[in-house]
Length: 123
Image (cartoon, rainbow, N blue to C red; front, side, top):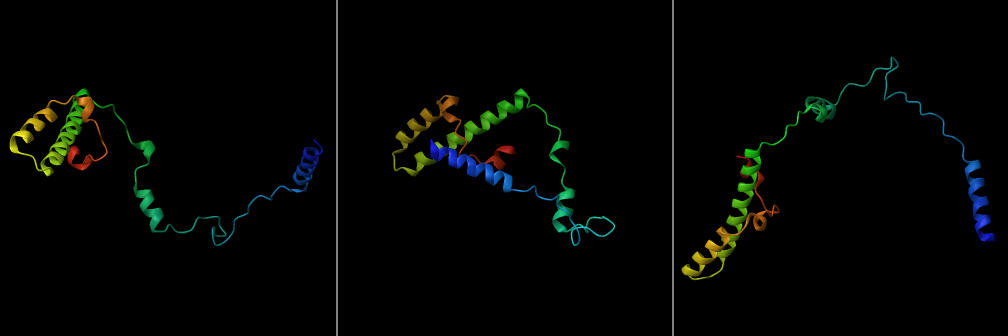
């Protein structure tokens, strides 16, 4: 209990000893005497060319767009599974059977997005 009181007193002394920092006053080289900003550098020029995120108009995806995206993700997942299957040394009949199984998988099993080629999907 006494240790806590000592700590509290030390904290109070520390708070009293701290003085408010004076407001920052900027001067040359950051601002010219006439309070103008410096000439823009290459980074500033490039940043000013970009469209601010607040100016981008967003729209909801149509049902057709959502269906196309889902179908594309499903197709790429099927391709990845079939490619893995082809890497195994199986006989052609077995490959055909497993490919048929992959094609009958429900959409819920084909929504992995880890290795999707988004550029290819966007075309």
